[in-house]
Image (cartoon, rainbow, N blue to C red; front, side):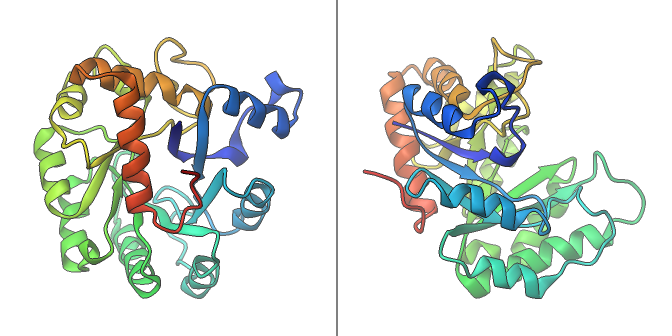
Length: 262
């Protein structure tokens, strides 16, 4: 079995399935994907996303949060985040974090929003899903200052080097690899994929974005997570089945509330 630990199912291009989400799910099952974590990126769209996921208990979990690039400068509705975060189907808080690549100017609002997500996660005792782009020092600093390591989480769609990975692991973060690890110019990420302890990494698609080779540049789907697993198995010199098994075990350990089939 494979688990896609980070995808956005409410944003998939369903044209190849004639707009039928059930047909997409059938394809995912055929490709060996037994569970998917559908990650929230803003609060207004969360109810619709959660309703979609509720149709597939045991196969889809959800998280809730505000992506650092979403609703720029708008204060976070902390009460609403807490309300949604308390739902049993919510297994994590996020996607949250910092993104200095696409945002400019005074980004203290982004930092405060990250802190608020961490505080909610600690209240609810749920792990965090962290986005960090061009902001490694502030991401790790705020993580330490807010003692987010007490609940832990995952640095998703990892696109940094071994130094960043090592520091994240020391801070009780897992590292999650997306289709980027299959790109020819991703040598630094591939080095991390070789070195990271096998009990501390996950695999994801971040679909509908960042499709792996050989689908790069095309719409991405959770059933392409197998290509990520194949590349990591190649890099580590281990069987594909070992990567699949270990990442499923790691997912269950981090997202303890996820109803993942054994």
